[in-house]
Image (spheres, rainbow, N blue to C red):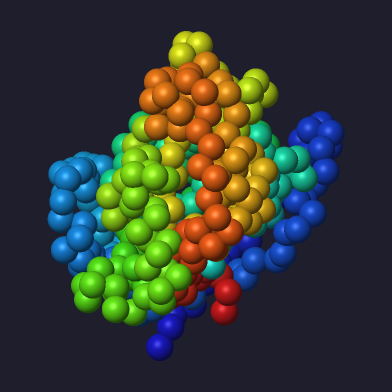
Length: 375
């Protein structure tokens, strides 16, 4: 049985304030939200995470970004789930975190650039969210240290949600379903920005993906793979294509930011715009390839719509750049001439087939991570 938490009337923002913003009042794709979340009587279990043995290897087995000051609890992650999907977190109440991070797309956006609450576009593609416990820095330019810091930035961003933290705290204090949830999560009904940050972080850190076809195959020497998928995996791990030199471990990622040869001159300098260091120009975080088949479009600006386009970029489209990663340079030096892999059509097809084995369908439809307002 599910319980419906009652809701009181929200405080209405002054019309004059919105008029002074001189912006459209609602995001064009917005849909009405249910009045209150439907939550199970007993909170979902967010603590039982049974990573397979393949994750028990360096560096995954010694990276854990879950803060000792903010361990995941079932009640805290439940509150974080409600906050993640609640449109009250945006100024005009029409955008939630989930508006740009869809579960069925590995908590990414199907658009190259996401649409904010006034219809404006974000400057970069919305990254997938899962297995964040294996990273310490977030966003394409690594500007956020820790998930607790990351989650507050979109809320305050004028394009995305445009709320001040004080305004958010005051608003949520007037929503009936929040004081009980904060009481359950933190032992007090008091709502603070710090608690909002911690609850969101607990939910996001609970988003774990490790049950793909690849993971199941890892346990039985990939007997469940087709020949095409086997060939693609061999190619992926070969010294010829060396995909696994940047997308490392069974999480298929790295904590680094790199230049992968998208442009000779970058309009967006990525990490370089943050540090002011020319050696960082064009560097962007290397994302995990898990669930990559459902999380397009790809790259920081969403320029590639399909995996086939991504593979072709690395096959024949890497552009020269002073900071081009040495693993993509023909002479093995940073900024060296771009490699050309000359893959056959079969090789490209097999590589895409292998990447599709990294989709974790259980994760994409896990009710623990679903929208509690859809009922």
